[in-house]
Length: 199
Ligand SMILES: CC(C)(COP(=O)(O)OP(=O)(O)OC[C@H]1O[C@@H](n2cnc3c(N)ncnc32)[C@H](O)[C@@H]1OP(=O)(O)O)[C@@H](O)C(=O)NCCC(=O)NCCS
Image (tube, rainbow, N blue to C red):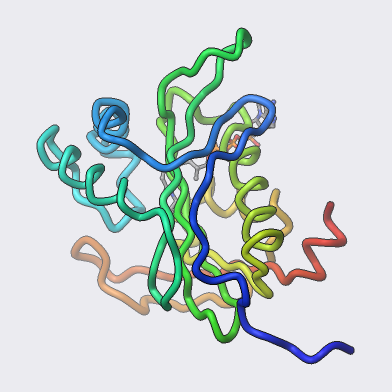
């Protein structure tokens, strides 16, 4: 057995990633309208630690997150917009975004998160994008374990974790006050060796 090491790839800078139907790349100021389109829908933010945003708030939030392109220290994050690529290869709208949090560099632990516009849900885009995110986390970034924190009542997010091969590791009952109510918290995770068995 090899001796465990933390992430040796830091600092890591985001770069565009192409999948069959999508382009994952840092957000830019050109994406403000597209991001606002999903940040202003109540059902989208129900389980996210986001308020409903107006256009100006989405603008500020998107500009801030456009700067999240490098991870180096614990709690740094990358944000990747998910752009729909047309059959002709032309770029389309940003239909969602993905986050990569550096939970611990010394322990090679990465947290991931996701959000998609309802018009583009139930088409496999989130699965396609999140699979590319796992490949990034375990591949170039060199993670040992990737995890997601979610409300277990968020059935679409639970199903996505399960499609990715993530296991439920923990279920904390009423462990936090979320949007004014006691809320449960689940942890789903996948280890590098489990991911290697998946692919
Ligand atoms: C969580 C979230 C990203 C999941 O999105 P999703 O649309 O359910 O996931 P996918 O895009 O992978 O779509 C999967 C569905 O598309 C179907 N599908 C259709 N075409 C497909 C294709 N070509 N490939 C794969 N799946 C396809 C699958 O069968 C699956 O259907 P099912 O839900 O009936 O089983 C989405 O619900 C969301 O953004 N929610 C709001 C934000 C949020 O709560 N984020 C998480 C906080 S923890």
